[in-house]
Amino acid sequence: MHELNEEINDKEIRLIGSEGEQMGIMSSAEALKIADEQGLDLVKISPQAVPPVCKLMNYGKFRFEQSKREKEAKKNQH
Image (cartoon, rainbow, N blue to C red):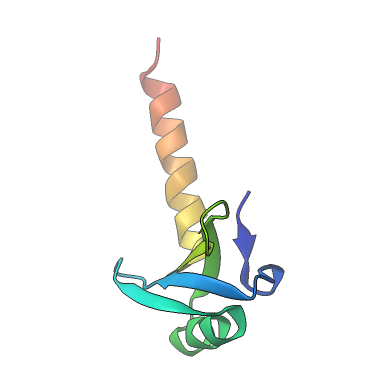
């Protein structure tokens, strides 16, 4: 499961924008502020990395797309 928004309590994170662009290393508070301004969620996608990698995304839409792909994959296996 992914860590979201306020659950991310790392001092420094590497932020990736919603279009996949590198936005650099910053504090999680700063990244949360950017996410809030853009109306997006801050999602930790690579917790093992140093610093951890977080991405700006619409998490609800991401989960919906992911479950759709899983259903499709299940349907196609015999």
